[in-house]
Image (cartoon, rainbow, N blue to C red; front, top):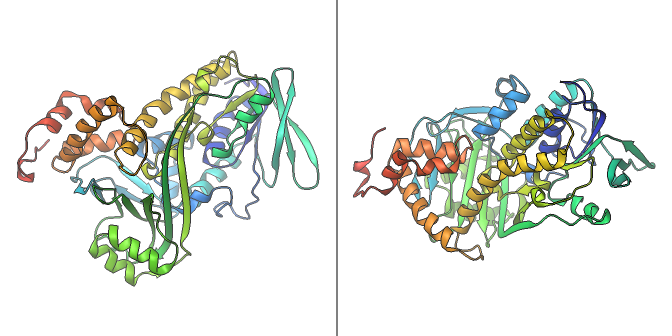
Amino acid sequence: MPALGGHAVVMGAGMAGLLTARALAESYENVTVVERDRPTAPEQERRGVPQGKHAHLLLARGKQVLEQMFPGITDELVANGAASFPVLERFRSQLVGREVRRGHVGEFVSMTRPFLEGHIRRRVEARGGVTLLDGHDVVGLAVRGDRVTGVRVNDGAGERVLDADLVVDAMGRGARSPAWLAQLGHPAPPTDELHVDIGYASRLVRAPEDALGADKGMLIGPKPGLSRAMAMFKVEGDSRWLLTLVGYAGHPPTDEEGFMEFARTVVPDETFAVLKESEPLSEIRRFRFPTSRRRRYEKLRSFPGGLLVAGDAICSFNPIYGQGMSVAALQAAALRRTLMDGEHDLARRYFRAVARVVAPVWRLAVQADLAIPEIQAPRPLSFRITDAYIRRVQRAVSLDEAAASRFFRVTSLVEPPGSLLRPSMAWRALRPRRSAAEAVRP
């Protein structure tokens, strides 16, 4: 692909920033990624990614996109210690108190966030024309007229300007693009928000390889009367597991006694017995996520030239669903496709492409959030109708292998939510059942 410009700058070296840089590298001669943190090693935990200490999932669709961008990355991750296991076959999950039927969907790859980010960072750095500029604060934008022409940065010794043909804000939920738009005389994007008030507490432990029997991952979701959840996954390293506890309204404590008491209320008894004998490998770390937020940049009628936004700076989901990294990958893929048609009307075309990626995932997440009684928000008629059907789907998922496989393909972003309405799925969800013995074989 011919170069569209000489230099692009990405602000933020998290997953969204790194994937954006990879997409831009095909269309710009040089790409610079500016990062405030100064990691001493590629897989070091970073202050700018507080959620990195907690359980992360790379959903099936996200894994597909990463493979397209970085061929062989899955094999590389597994060769270096990441756990790979078949979803539903070696992954135990409960939805609203019901065990999900085992089946065949695909492979999960399980690892810590710093481990994945470090591998992606090395791949990006190895690509010619990409420079990672650590230890630099973004001070502001350089502007000429109604066009962004660069980024003002400070490394502690002084300020300088990085001239750029294109600047991308990938600085996460705290991104400053809305404020910069106001300074340039543009309106802020309309914003959809849902207050979820979710709290995490996580720790790494050393436990036997068979801590979950033959399974390598477990997810227990909230259920009626208990708005708590937990996730436990095998991660890179010898007998290392990552345990994350989740609470709505009542957050899990970070002291040893409180953490274990909270775990006792949500972790299955046989797993809790293993946890009591496990060796702690880290402190208990906390993360709070107050609000899901979607900024609707595609609705703006004007936008400065030379500027785009990516990742959580556009949309940040309730992290319990594990969608964030995969959606960041899908956004980067959308940018890559948009750039193939040149720079003309780039912002409008890009934000519309991203909206098509984000919209169905946002609807999935909000629908699931509103099913939690502790979340204080209006429940419109459309939600109540959909919720009644989803509850039937969740029951079918506990009884029927084909229903479970279809449901997980949707939640893994491989299939659109509308596939849950296909006749074969609707029949499984709506048919009367008296017991699990009536489960339908595919």
